[in-house]
Image (cartoon, rainbow, N blue to C red; front, top):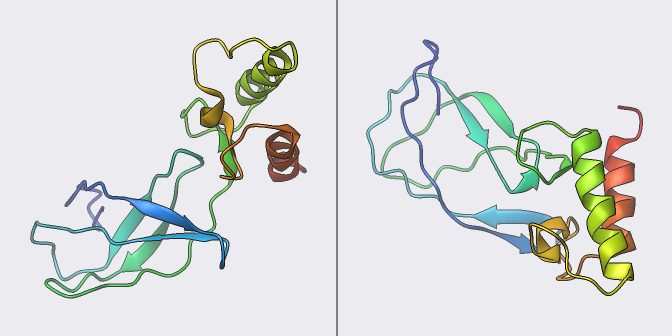
Length: 135
Protein backbone atom coordinates (compact mmCIF):
# COMPACT_ATOMS: atom_id res chain seq x y z
CA UNK A 1 0.00 0.00 0.00
CA UNK A 2 1.44 3.29 -1.10
CA UNK A 3 0.66 6.72 0.28
CA UNK A 4 0.84 10.07 -1.47
CA UNK A 5 4.64 10.07 -1.12
CA UNK A 6 4.98 6.77 -2.96
CA UNK A 7 6.39 5.08 0.14
CA UNK A 8 5.30 1.50 0.76
CA UNK A 9 3.44 1.40 4.08
CA UNK A 10 2.60 -2.31 4.09
CA UNK A 11 3.47 -5.28 1.93
CA UNK A 12 1.21 -8.13 2.92
CA UNK A 13 0.18 -11.42 1.42
CA UNK A 14 -2.89 -13.52 1.89
CA UNK A 15 -5.20 -15.96 0.20
CA UNK A 16 -8.06 -15.21 -2.11
CA UNK A 17 -10.32 -17.96 -3.34
CA UNK A 18 -12.28 -18.17 -6.57
CA UNK A 19 -16.03 -17.99 -5.97
CA UNK A 20 -17.70 -19.88 -8.81
CA UNK A 21 -21.18 -18.61 -7.84
CA UNK A 22 -20.16 -14.98 -8.37
CA UNK A 23 -17.24 -15.46 -10.76
CA UNK A 24 -14.79 -13.47 -8.67
CA UNK A 25 -12.10 -13.87 -6.04
CA UNK A 26 -12.62 -13.00 -2.40
CA UNK A 27 -10.44 -13.17 0.65
CA UNK A 28 -9.40 -11.58 3.88
CA UNK A 29 -5.94 -10.10 4.22
CA UNK A 30 -4.65 -9.20 7.68
CA UNK A 31 -2.61 -6.02 7.91
CA UNK A 32 -0.58 -6.07 11.10
CA UNK A 33 1.09 -2.72 10.68
CA UNK A 34 -0.07 0.75 11.46
CA UNK A 35 -1.08 2.74 8.42
CA UNK A 36 -1.43 6.46 7.99
CA UNK A 37 -4.99 7.79 8.04
CA UNK A 38 -4.46 9.38 4.64
CA UNK A 39 -5.81 7.80 1.45
CA UNK A 40 -3.61 5.03 0.06
CA UNK A 41 -3.21 3.11 -3.16
CA UNK A 42 -4.06 -0.55 -2.62
CA UNK A 43 -2.29 -2.73 -5.18
CA UNK A 44 -3.52 -6.26 -5.87
CA UNK A 45 -1.32 -8.97 -7.37
CA UNK A 46 -2.84 -12.34 -8.31
CA UNK A 47 -0.95 -15.04 -10.20
CA UNK A 48 -1.57 -15.10 -13.98
CA UNK A 49 -3.20 -11.66 -13.92
CA UNK A 50 -1.98 -8.15 -14.55
CA UNK A 51 -1.76 -6.18 -11.33
CA UNK A 52 -4.52 -3.77 -10.43
CA UNK A 53 -5.42 -1.48 -7.63
CA UNK A 54 -7.54 1.14 -6.01
CA UNK A 55 -6.29 4.68 -5.49
CA UNK A 56 -7.23 7.05 -2.67
CA UNK A 57 -8.63 4.37 -0.38
CA UNK A 58 -8.48 4.92 3.38
CA UNK A 59 -7.86 1.87 5.57
CA UNK A 60 -9.33 2.03 9.06
CA UNK A 61 -7.15 0.13 11.58
CA UNK A 62 -8.55 -2.81 13.58
CA UNK A 63 -11.67 -3.16 11.46
CA UNK A 64 -12.71 -5.02 8.33
CA UNK A 65 -12.17 -2.83 5.28
CA UNK A 66 -13.75 -3.66 1.96
CA UNK A 67 -12.07 -2.35 -1.15
CA UNK A 68 -14.09 -1.70 -4.30
CA UNK A 69 -14.21 -4.39 -6.95
CA UNK A 70 -11.08 -4.52 -9.09
CA UNK A 71 -11.15 -6.06 -12.55
CA UNK A 72 -7.91 -7.85 -13.37
CA UNK A 73 -6.87 -9.09 -16.82
CA UNK A 74 -5.92 -12.79 -17.09
CA UNK A 75 -2.96 -14.00 -19.13
CA UNK A 76 0.26 -12.86 -17.48
CA UNK A 77 1.62 -16.40 -17.15
CA UNK A 78 5.29 -15.36 -16.90
CA UNK A 79 4.55 -12.85 -14.09
CA UNK A 80 6.22 -9.81 -15.65
CA UNK A 81 3.06 -7.64 -15.34
CA UNK A 82 2.73 -7.46 -19.12
CA UNK A 83 0.60 -9.60 -21.42
CA UNK A 84 2.55 -10.10 -24.60
CA UNK A 85 3.88 -12.59 -27.12
CA UNK A 86 6.02 -14.26 -24.45
CA UNK A 87 2.89 -15.23 -22.51
CA UNK A 88 1.24 -16.47 -25.70
CA UNK A 89 4.30 -18.53 -26.60
CA UNK A 90 4.31 -20.22 -23.19
CA UNK A 91 0.60 -20.97 -23.39
CA UNK A 92 0.68 -22.37 -26.91
CA UNK A 93 3.86 -24.37 -26.31
CA UNK A 94 2.35 -26.14 -23.32
CA UNK A 95 -0.89 -26.74 -25.21
CA UNK A 96 1.01 -28.33 -28.10
CA UNK A 97 3.05 -30.49 -25.72
CA UNK A 98 -0.11 -31.71 -24.03
CA UNK A 99 -1.67 -32.54 -27.41
CA UNK A 100 1.42 -34.67 -28.12
CA UNK A 101 0.97 -36.36 -24.69
CA UNK A 102 4.14 -34.72 -23.35
CA UNK A 103 4.66 -32.81 -20.14
CA UNK A 104 4.87 -29.04 -20.34
CA UNK A 105 8.47 -27.89 -20.18
CA UNK A 106 9.32 -25.71 -17.19
CA UNK A 107 5.96 -25.60 -15.43
CA UNK A 108 2.90 -27.57 -14.48
CA UNK A 109 -0.02 -27.16 -16.90
CA UNK A 110 -2.04 -25.73 -13.99
CA UNK A 111 0.16 -22.61 -14.19
CA UNK A 112 -1.66 -21.95 -17.46
CA UNK A 113 -5.16 -22.66 -16.11
CA UNK A 114 -6.46 -19.12 -16.61
CA UNK A 115 -10.13 -19.89 -15.97
CA UNK A 116 -9.46 -21.79 -12.72
CA UNK A 117 -11.39 -24.91 -13.65
CA UNK A 118 -8.53 -27.22 -12.62
CA UNK A 119 -7.40 -28.15 -16.14
CA UNK A 120 -5.41 -26.46 -18.86
CA UNK A 121 -7.18 -26.73 -22.20
CA UNK A 122 -8.46 -24.77 -25.21
CA UNK A 123 -10.76 -22.75 -22.92
CA UNK A 124 -7.70 -21.17 -21.32
CA UNK A 125 -6.26 -20.25 -24.72
CA UNK A 126 -9.62 -18.75 -25.68
CA UNK A 127 -9.67 -16.70 -22.48
CA UNK A 128 -6.17 -15.44 -23.20
CA UNK A 129 -7.17 -14.38 -26.72
CA UNK A 130 -10.36 -12.72 -25.45
CA UNK A 131 -8.44 -10.79 -22.79
CA UNK A 132 -5.89 -9.54 -25.33
CA UNK A 133 -8.39 -8.62 -28.06
CA UNK A 134 -7.81 -5.05 -29.08
CA UNK A 135 -4.46 -4.73 -27.27
